Image (cartoon, rainbow over all chains, first blue to last red; front, side, top):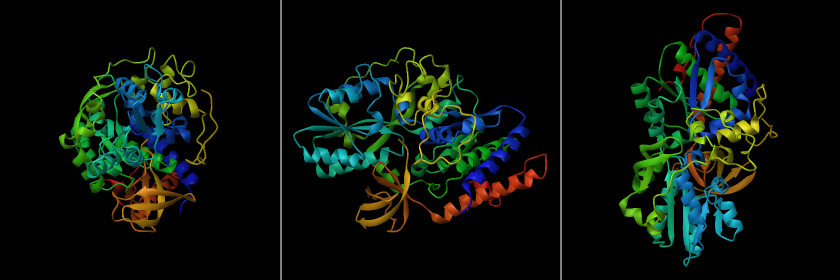
Length: 378
Length: 93
């Protein structure tokens, strides 16, 4: 085993030399909330070479969920005849009429679950109650929803449904590359855990069509810097490539069982993203044979109104078009204690990462997921 | 939300398993990793094992990083251009 601290320092030095040799400003985008958090936790943005910018893209599933979808979720959770089961990330996301946490304090049954299967179990245990599972997340999370739906079908659980806002990352990456408002991207640091499901080969058309490199990377500081070094050296060598640096978990074809579950239950459908509008085929909708588990159909929910919290620029932040500090609410009206936009609520949100880890000017290589640093005010 | 953590599979019964995660025992659903055996390291996300971690590939990944580290050391004694020195093609696929 090699020393992570020493390796990171040495890789960083090599990254600096490579960046200096590039002689132009370059920008790489990560599209994974866990990469965002990991990078900030170890202070990586503060020690990047001056001409290399790491942009946080739309990788936080809570953040990319449209405000209308969030309002609809909160409205559903506010009904007396519904038990809403959700992952903890969604609890404090503000909607037009409060959030799920405030709905819970009013006596509504909002339950945080560890797994989609826990939501299904709740439905089986309480057959007289309607149980809705808030299905948010990228391809990493969507197979778990699909598994619960399949099991509900198998057991004929009639009081279980899902409010699905799942997203697919590849259409979003394509949308970013064709959006003139987004800064030029010289390479993607691709999401490690999404890639576990979808595989590495799925990025190849992006590499070929857009002439932009895709590097799939891990989450520890050394792995992050290694991925950025790889991207920088590809720019330096005027190459584009698909590189998998997370091969212990990511196979070329992905996880076939998980993909089969997805294909069984869902089909691609247009989806609205916060700040990015409707991206064709970027969502997952229930197939006809499972449509009776769709909470939108069961509760006859109408199409939600789209709006943004006044003054909030989360939409621009998640697409890399603006930095959190460019938002007039950041760190003033909008903080992790009283968030206004989803990027401040989610632990994986860019604004939250900026607020918590600040820009301290040094690389903290001793950090781990289990070793949370103190919060630093911006 | 896409956070996944590695844990060791210590018990298995059909599609249900128990993992050791930093000393905690967690139940997981292993339907997406039928090849995983007791003793394997698996990635856990939202109550499901989403992949069996390949120890050989993990060693290769760390070897790549070790290569890059060595290149940085070599570079420290030189100035000038950066060359790609990874032994196994830098993971390009």
